[in-house]
Image (cartoon, rainbow, N blue to C red):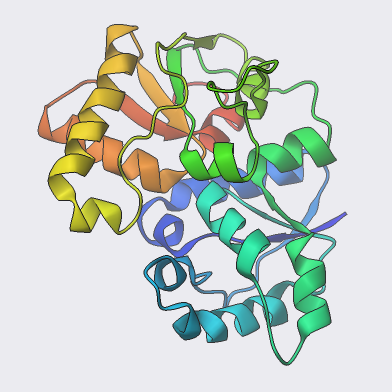
Length: 247
């Protein structure tokens, strides 16, 4: 299985350990992983801000970089959702269309494609999982609480395979953290208040770590935690699934 590793720009610049953990995790499950060195932003920030026409070159570069792979995997639900829904290339429309069906967020790839049922991972801590909106409502990583349907969570399914990890219950399992990309810039006060509310749910239930599948949301929450001198830490799920001890 030939997998192209897509690492979003903010992960590359601010949380490179998440990219490394993703690579190591995929290799542990026998994937042959390639990393195109000239990959750049997927174009989501421009598209979400009403400037999708400025992301066309990002699309074309993504197609050139990843068209040869069986699958493309990235540790970011929001970026992956953008690619699944919006990737296009006027010069290579067929390759772009095929790629949209081969792009996977890390958790859905591990659960749906690799069918992971066991992990050699150890993380002896109380962990609260923050389910980001794009992953839940766009990618279907977990059930939305307002639906009268059987609950499920692909990230929780994986975390329950980790030795020593206690996945704590939350009062509001799918509440937004308030990041929302440019929303956190344009509506800073509302964004921070939403972040504080989201953190309070984890803290009240005794979380030592807040895990997530989107570093963008975790970065927002981490900033609030640091400003309040909290001892609670954030960690990407790839780091936990790849861990043999303390992150």
